[in-house]
Length: 160
Image (tube, rainbow, N blue to C red; front, side, top):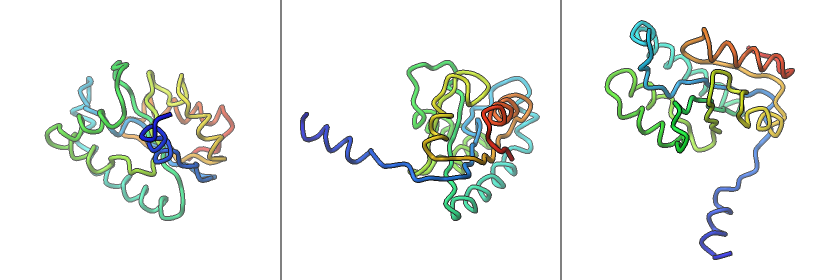
C-alpha cells in the first residue's frame, strides 16, 4: 500500500471510547422543506440552542454524540456535504445547521427512512461504545425521533 494511503488510514482510524450514555441527534441537519416545516421552524432555533447546550454539558461528562440524519434519497451523499448544504441555507435553517454541526469527535449515520436504527450501523456503533442509555433528541418528534426512541427501547436501551 502506498505511504499516502497508509497515512490516510492511520490519521482517521481512532478507537471509539466507551460511552455508557450516548446522545443521538435525529435530523437536526435539515433543509426543512417538507409540508408543515414553516410551523416547526418557529420554535426550531430555540430548540436547537437548548440542544447545543445539552450537547455541551453531556460532552463535558464524556458522553458521545451520534448524528442520525436522513439522506434525502441522495444515495451518493456524505454527511459533511449535507452539513455544508444546510449551513448555506438562509435564516434559521442555516443557523441551526451551523449551531449543531458535528464536531470531529462526533459520529454520523445517514438513514434512508424514519428510524435511525432501520438499515443503518447505529446499533453496531452503540454496541462498540458499550452504550446502555440513549438520550434521543430532534425537532420533529412525531415520526423520526419517535420511531428511533421506540426502536432503541426495543433493542434494549434505556431511553430518555
